[in-house]
Image 1 (cartoon, helix red, strand yellow):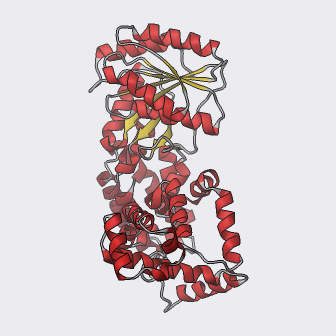
Image 2 (spheres, rainbow, N blue to C red):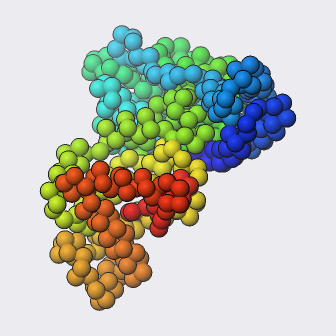
Image 3 (cartoon, rainbow, N blue to C red):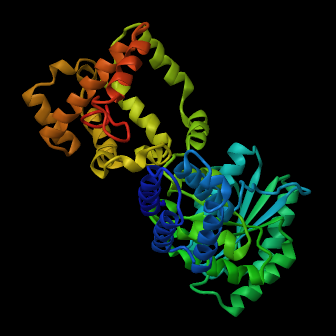
Length: 464
């Protein structure tokens, strides 16, 4: 998400960083670039106008013109305005109600409502330790109820059954009654979607809202519809008292116009981002962290939280002890590391959160992409336990067998073995007190005339 915007803004602000002082002329040029970048990202025009005006007012203020580093101050102004446009801080769900707290999900057909119900149920169950029940009031789409039942089973939420011949209001009331009896903390109600906003749909959803009086009414919208997402959210908000928005399919949206437009147009906060197809792919929306990502400064906080939650700490410690004792780093260890990375959403999601990734060439990113990671795992899976422990035995005929078994080429096997050897050398340097030595070496390579290109990638790309 935001790849195009990040690329454009990073280049623009980089040019400004080199300026000794800020003048009306170079601010004007920078603002023109920012305006173009936002419009290309499909940000709504009123939002672009307000944003550029705010940045201009602050950029020509005393604080900037008297600063010793005007370029950096302007970057901070752009960052602060991005945060303000998206809503200052993360607004969580307000579940401080007599259980069960009712969450109602609304949105157009195909926006990812049912999948988001499952993701939200899992989020509440795992992170908030809530007992969650889900129910579908979508009586028009025959597969909707079955789909929610499957999703509920996958995430471990209680499912309240409903049928296509029932009235949505009756289903919701019965589910609420059952949720009270089974002492559920939260009841999530999935509603019917339509292909467009229509009077019948709005009348039905209003009746549902009145019947169950939810504490949270979340509007689910597809990020790839850009500024249309904000306009649809506004239409829903006029009919329903929305409390927030879930922006889905953000992993497929390179522009990010919806994220930057929704708060300004509807006045409602984005509470969550859907960042993939898996049931774990739901992130709380933090405007400050997203602004940092847009400006190519990464999102280390989210990354640290994710590592703490998803990485198997015992496995990581086991590997660290093994390396410190000088025991060999094997291909099996290598595969385990790649799989740990996949738990963090894959290499793509990881790189998205690291600072300075905007300067890394696309070819290097592709080399560490999720497809490449999958290929590495397939190659290692085609090896025998002996080959994984002693890669030196892998010669001609073995390479051909491994390539055939993993659906790859012999040169792919060669490439993996070369990358593994590089990583093994690195691990050897970490033995005993070698870690500090290795870091000093890296520091030397990163200095003037060193071998590190912009963005901090070692020559030949990643060590994996």
